Amino acid sequence: MANAVEEKEAQTPPNLNTDEAEHQKPSNVEEEKDDVVGDDDEDEEEEEGEEEDEAEDSEQEPPRKPLSRESQLREHKSKMDGLFRRMRTEKVNLRVHDVVIKGNTKTKDWIIEAELESVKSATTLQELLEAAGIVNARLQQLEVFDSVKVTLDAGPPELPGTANVIVEVVETNSPLSGECGAYMKTTARSWTVEGSVKFKNWFGYGDLWDGSVAYGPNQTSEVSAGVFLPRFKGLPTPVLARVSLLSQDWQEFSSYRERMLGLSLGLFSTRCHDLVYNLGWRSLTDPSQMSSMSVRRQLGHSLLSSLKYTFKLDRRNSPVRPLKGYAFVSTTQVGGLTPDHRSLRFLRQVNAEIWLDHSPRMLGCGSNWEEFDLRYAVPFGFYHAALNFGISGGVIFPWGSGFMNKPSPLPERFFLGGDFSPICTLGGPTTVWGFKTRGLGPTEPRRQIKDKSNDDNSEVAGIDFVGGDLAVTAFADLSFDLPLKWLRERGVHGHVFAGAGNLAKLTENEFRSFSFHKFLQSFRSSVGVGIVIPTKLFRLEGNFYYILKQLDHGKTFGRLQETGFRFSFSAPL
Image (cartoon, rainbow, N blue to C red; front, top):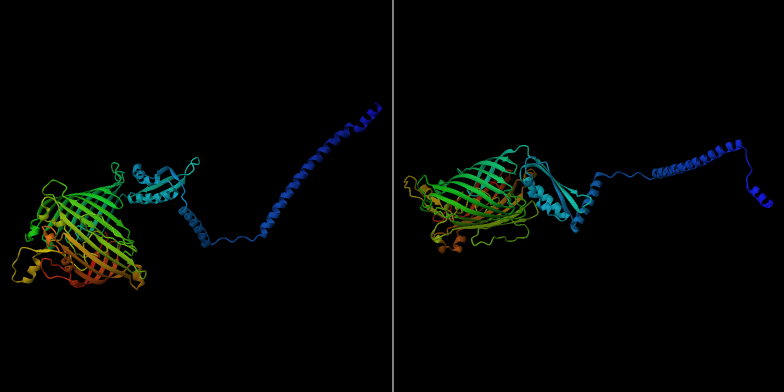
């Protein structure tokens, strides 16, 4: 026991008095606090040391020079090229989640939504970008918006692989507008000065209302009014309706005046296809009462009811001075779609011009009756020189009971000649360089006038140009820049050209005596050189013509333009 007690006492520390214990406790606490504060100070000193080391390291590194603007552009271009390269090689699957339309206060939403079908059906990012560009162009073509902006945004986070399309439009502030200019009239084979007034988006359906007045140098006048609807009753294509009153005076050339009140209704229209129904009441008169026999037989009233289909493909770089590309227009017109006996029954086929670049290819419509126009452009690579050449042809024929003995309608026949450049006329055989208006083709004598004082002029005054049922024209044009820089900057250039053409009658059993060899031998042709001055409204040419081949007066007399210098105006179709 004694030993156990001694061991216990040895393990127990000696007792301290109360005062010493009280003084000892705070000193221990202060020492512990100092130990903690000391540790924090040491950590702060270590962090400050590290920051100072990093600062010293950063001071030791040389500062980076800012990239120049050219370097930034090169870097940005490299990134964009990489992105485009990836988009070309890889397809990014994407679908449209929502389409948001903003800014249309008057225009109906469904008018804009009808143009967004291609966007909604896109399945990849590439298709979506292409569709967005097409939608932007189509909305601007409506002519009711001052600006159009299509934005592609990411879809909801919970729906990966989706995108939202935001269409922002700014409606036009001035719906009323007007314009004037010089235009080509294929029906009149002449150019006219026109003025028009247009009112946009009257009812909020994207509708365009317009009225126009036209006047030509050959006493051609036209007053018309029309409306254009981009969407109507769920139809996928626009609808165009137009009422017009046309008056033309052909007394000088063919001894008749034409007046027609007509209605034109566009049934189907896309980028390449166009289907139009025409209904008109036509009147042919002869105030001079000196017309030829074939003209007198067609005087009076007639009903025009026809369906006209046009296929157009234009890939030229310029309609005024094409250096490359091609264009093709084919028109088929069927008249006589009413049971009225006064209805004009005919079939007219027009295949208009083709411009081809490096690889020629034939385009056709596969009709039994055809009018074609083939153009080919070969660039030379210096002085913007290019060789354009082409060939055109067309035919018209009546149909119905006894059609082989009937004549074709006089206003629908082909007439060649006029002060127009075949470079700009995209619509079939209409003109040949160097020949006056209606200056080629079959003629018939008018009623004889005995004038003893001037026997020479009596023969010229007694001829009517009655047109042809078959028309063929050809031309070649070599354009080149002029050496003066001031002229090149303004588009003024020179050209050397040659043209030829002919007409023939096929109706009233004339096709039985038709000879292709004689038809080629009777071609009229001309060559020339000149300067071309392009403007915003028309193409002005100052040309020197030389007639290579012309025939004597007779059944196929040609009213030719004499050799010499002449100015001409042409507006692209």
